[in-house]
Image (cartoon, rainbow, N blue to C red; front, side, top):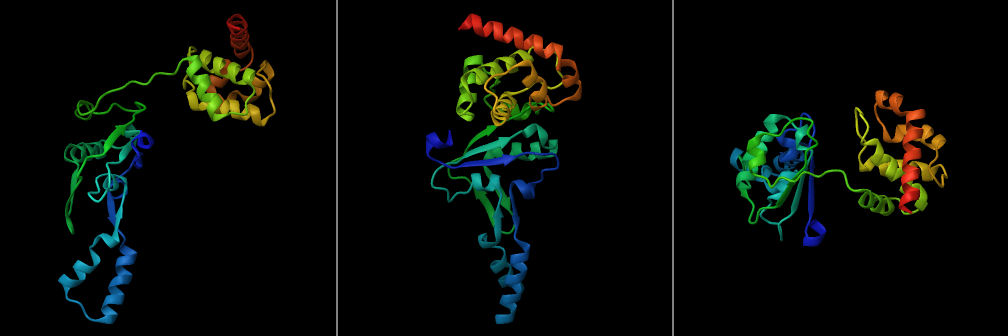
Length: 248
């Protein structure tokens, strides 16, 4: 989207314990201290003069949220707030207020307001439910797993040197695994990793031995590995190969 609009992509990766200083702004205290010593050595400064010198944009570290609403931007940015469900509820509340007005007040500088608001995209993996107040302010889009053809196209783009049969069988088996009762269902990224791992092992196709050897690339829970490794995985692979022959 940023490429299509010819603008910057600014990403904020959320995590537990994320606070305002890491998401919005903070002051560069070491540089401020050094500057204060230099100014004091050149000529004694009164308190107001020192404050004006030290609390300026030159010493302001702009984190992603402040970068996105920077009024000096030539054109609005695309702001990706990734995995908002991993942040604390308090941060979500702060974010709700910021995105409502696209402005913040920095006590030492005043109010910073976006001339044109950024295009904001929030993602969530539902590790916890996002508050309804935030959902109400969003256009909600549920992204399901892709179809076989679409996932195969993604794999071919991301691992272009993968043999055709290998890419097809791994993609089909990954899709089959998603219909199993698993603790952690594999996503598209695991499909890509699985193909890349098999390419690194010089595999031309996917057979039962290769599945057994590399199943830990796509399944990341001990219970899932124990349930699928061996006979069950071989059965799924046979079913995938049979469907592939029929499709061909």
